[in-house]
Image (cartoon, rainbow, N blue to C red; front, side, top):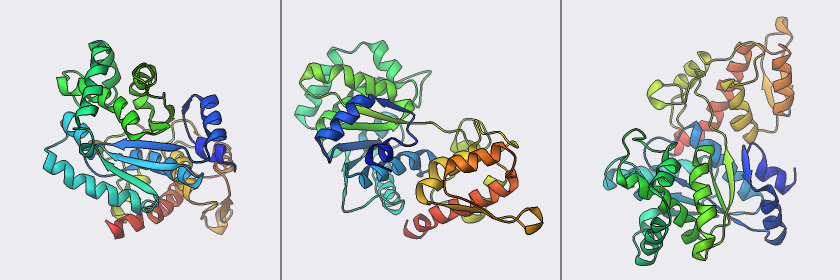
Length: 316
């Protein structure tokens, strides 16, 4: 797999692919960042972007992780004291998941976002951004989408300025970050900054086939006990032969095959014996052809997810 394939695998959208190719052709070590609100446990949703950052790191990119403590505060995720503790915990989780501690730049938002130059730039951007545009940018990420606070209108403006302040070439995030990234792409050049390339990862369904939510118990956290993971995956939505919107198959695509070159589906000899796969596509196609039963798929998913999460449980 060449560097471009490594960086772009499992990405839902690239804005734009031509810009990314040009960047990589001119610079063997582009700078990429993801911002995370320190607001709770690290879970499958975070792990998708962490896996992509590891891909980027392996492709020679310089990686920055923004622990966006001030963003979390503006989005009403807790007091600054509470958020500071969670930020440190999140950092330990990211390292345990595989980010190279020596090669990853971890930055707290409050370490630069309260400076005069930064805030002046945010205010300049505010003068050029309509209230409707700011609100639309926050629709997918706001805690109070139906009754937003003024602080949440400042949020996307700050996120755009983070890209400039951190000096990165590429902004990465879930596809729910798209509107904010487009705001940055359109406005930063007018302020004398470069427009970022954007990499967007998909937003996955919860294990029950509905929207992922910790309150529903349909997600997996990186500190989740083995027994809990086994039970959740055993009950997961996984229709026979269905490959679209199948959260168990998603575990293999976005997590397990990102860590392992090959996997084994264990089965009794009376049911045909073990099956080994060296690619997600081969597993997906066999499941679609009903050569792999959902119960066997779930059992293997639980085994490998526990293997991935075990180092995190030990370190954090």
